[in-house]
Image (tube, rainbow, N blue to C red; front, side, top):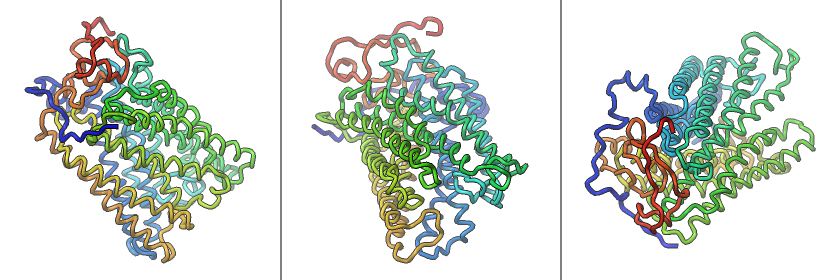
Length: 563
């Protein structure tokens, strides 16, 4: 394996930003709020999910400061319950689930398949307005008493006993569900019907396969959680007996319905990040991806099998032993397609000419952290061990290794990888690498001690704890402060680069995808002529335009109708 360390991405000599592109096509805030350009809608989502990320981050900061001492003097127990609930709601429903699909997926899918836009541009804009509307209801809930039910909204706590502002939060998440459904529908139709000539299913970028699989979960799973929370809200407002035992309801039914969506929702968050890594690895290893077909198939397998493992969250609810054994087996089974991806990424790296640019650092960090998160998930799928570590900080650590170590690392890595395409500018590479290293160190210092805390028996969601756990909690809080710096740095230098960064050129890495064959930033309709794809994906051996070996160069053909 050979390795190189470039200082900045290569630039096209004398390249100038195009005079007309999607960022300057029309000026004024009204043109943005009424746009149907998928690229502008992606940036609207980028601003929105970033806002909710920092809202959730503020709550997380207060949680970690409170847990510096065993007695927790910062907030009252009631306020602490609200902090971890609002942190979870903001991060999961309004950041993690929409971040990669709504931002990177919206921006890239038409570019990657050679289309002018998504299939339903007005529906795409509507999905963003629905997201904002749902977010406003949740923010109203935060501001008028907060939430104290946990992000899972377990009944009868949420539907009967809680005195917090549960109803507007449930309504906000219900509304937001329509945004996910419309986005998933738009992506599926776009991928089926708008691929460029020659862009067969097995020439699709793996990022598109990941988004397609995620969209299936959006369409099939989101209605379940929306209806479930609506029933909980109706029970709360009108005292209907869906889940309240006093009224003839069944609280375990709520858990079945909730987790039938919410475990596949884990794959909504992680599958797109896997797609990002599948684009970054071959680009910076200068090799074709190993096992393209298996990686594509594993994305579909994760989406399908993910719907059959929900009850592993419920081993301690009294379900039958035989059901628990079946769900335990299925939980081990769903790890296989994830392992396929990790093995294939590793095989791609083998004997590659690797350059450790910033996106590659995030991709490698993703693999390491996701590996820890995935392996610890097997502990939770083990019936005997789950009895000991259920509802402890072991679960918190496992979840964050998947969601923050996996989904967020993939999201930030993807932003760095495609930032030159989005803005036409290069960010400062040294600061970007520094931020990646800080984020990796801060993350592990924050969450690895929580594995030990959970194994030793510290329950999650408790506002105080025995003094013997303080050292590990102090380590976790110290790591959170480092992690916060790792997130703030990219926000600062990426924003700075939009105005002061060097011009990137159309293909600064260089990479093989269609999105790199259009100017940076792209024109409003993406391509001046409709591309014709006559090369295989990730073909770094036979691309003369990339300075590699010779045979057939990709061609561009004049546009014909809506092809």
